[in-house]
Image 1 (tube, one colour):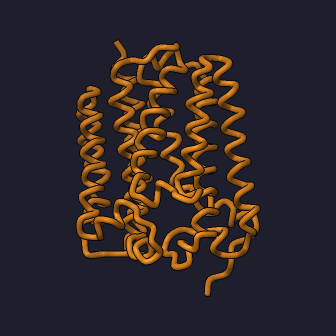
Image 2 (tube, rainbow, N blue to C red; image 1 turned 45 degrees about the horizontal axis):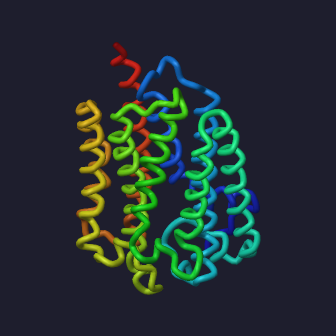
Amino acid sequence: MSEAPGSVKRWVLAARPRTLPAAIVPVAIGATLARPLSIEWVNTVLCAVVALALQIGVNYANDYSDGIKGTDEVRVGPFRLTASKLVSPKAVRNGAFAWFFVAALAGLELSARTSWWFVLVGLTAIIAAWFYTGGPKPYGYMGLGEVFVLIYFGFVATVGTAYAQHLHIAPKAWWFGLAAGAMACALLEANNMRDITGDQGSGKKTLAARLGRDKAKWLYVLCIAMLCAGLVVGGQWITAVIAVAVYFPALKLAFSNKQGRELLPMLMISARAQLIVGFVTTVTFFTTLR
């Protein structure tokens, strides 16, 4: 039996660092896609704080809700605070609320600097983050998690950051929002494909669990296809080729016979690929300035 992580490390592990690119990449893309040499840095940092705080908050919220529902009893994925019984459920819930509060504070400051519409958007994001696995009928258990991820970690984060720059939305922002959302969904599918057996046994009906291991691989393919479509229509077809290359190892795993713990590398590969594609995308914006 492995030694339990220390008091600080357990919180870091439960924040699931490999999922954090889903928060950073869309902000970086949104900040640079219009006029990269005139970035509003304060607004961009506020957008990043909101996105990161929401990502960590939803990770803790999922840890709490899955833990008290018992769906993490048989776990092959990352360390969980509640299921491990090393931290009280109340503390985990309060940890989630604390990060949502950080997101709200940063969001209020961003709204004051840009548009008060961001308050409404932020409120819906926090509600959606909590009810992903929380409440009596969590929509993440109904196979609707991809909708939340695509909307908030794709369109809202990318287009919202783009708007926060100069109070204007370039048309291509929507396509890059699709690309960013598709990468976040790929991260989710890598996680859900790994957990199919446990989720099916606990009644957590993610879309991957509903389809089963053999068909769920096509969800991952769909994510990469949407990513490439967004990049190509946005004018970055070379980046789309790079995206296929860096996601190819994860696609190979998706089409293999591996299950459960054997699919753990998919999450790592997907997170690394998201960072690479995000980096190449933003660099391309700078190098193609007219």
